[in-house]
Image 1: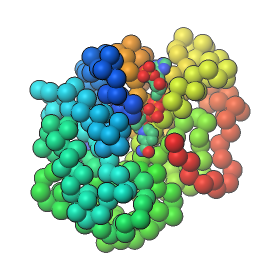
Image 2: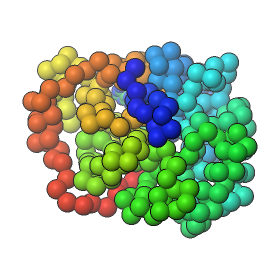
Image 3: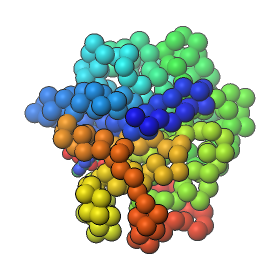
Image 4: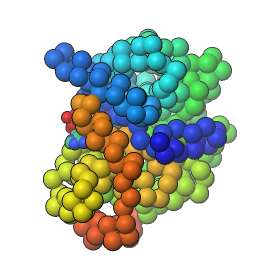
Amino acid sequence: MQTVTLPSGETVPALGQGTWNIGDRRDRRAQEIAALQAGMDLGMTLLDTAEMYGDGNSENLVGEALAGRRDEAFLVSKVLPSNASRRGTVKACEDSLRRLRTDRLDLYLLHWRGNYPLEETLEAFAQLQRDGKIRHWGVSNFDPGDMAELVSLEAGGEVSTNQVLYNLTRRGIEFDLLPWCRDRGIPVMAYSPIEQGRLLRQPALRKVAERHGATPAQVALAWTWRQGGVIAIPKAGSAEHVRENHGALSLQLSAEDFAELDRAWPAPTRRQPLEMI
Ligand code: NDP
């Protein structure tokens, strides 16, 4: 498994598993648990969830999937901005831990910026670290201005990641945010790396995939890693999709492939507002 190094020096898999919309349907539960476990077996041990997803349903299902193998996982969850006060963050984390049936998160993210001062959320993160309830903290959906403000704060330099929307059709961060993070050794977690499935129908992607005997999903994922420092977290609801996505790790895209993809989805030439899903 290719890895990405966090600022702490710890390494995590470059391919993890997203869990938005997982755990909402009883009839899919067994299949979704099997999918996450199949991914774990393949080394996709970074699991991304959030208190927001299905109002805790996703965390509940992840907790069930991790029964007996919590220590194999690098577990990521997120606090909603509306909960991100000093006390609210601690309470939200404790609620997440209960749903996940664990005593600690490996990484805890502020889901997006809200109205509570960042200092308050950071104080809560520090408290949670002291109490052994989280190991690292980070942010999500922070644009370059937000990141600059964050690292200007006393504890802000300890940020472990910024999780943002990134795929072939959403390349805005390549202009500013991605190089900014790379210069500081802060990995980016690419969410919706296959654009929630919409990318898979695109002819340019299919053409490159056919050339390699690969699938469009594999090309879309392999593309996200071309510059390093990026962790992709596709969500897959079946073991079949998980195994297919894992196959992206052995796909070597060529300069010709990248050029062709660039023609279909050009790199940004100017600053763009950070997109969110
Ligand atoms: P993705 O780009 O990961 O796409 C998920 C969709 O693609 C699902 O419908 C899935 O279907 C389908 N899919 C996955 N693999 C394949 C495959 N090999 N072939 C065909 N279809 C496939 O979208 P998400 O928005 O879910 O993003 C991934 C994760 O990122 C989320 O689950 C969440 O953890 C995180 N996220 C974070 C956000 C934030 O604000 N921080 C915002 C959005 C997402 P199926 O289920 O049938 O496999």
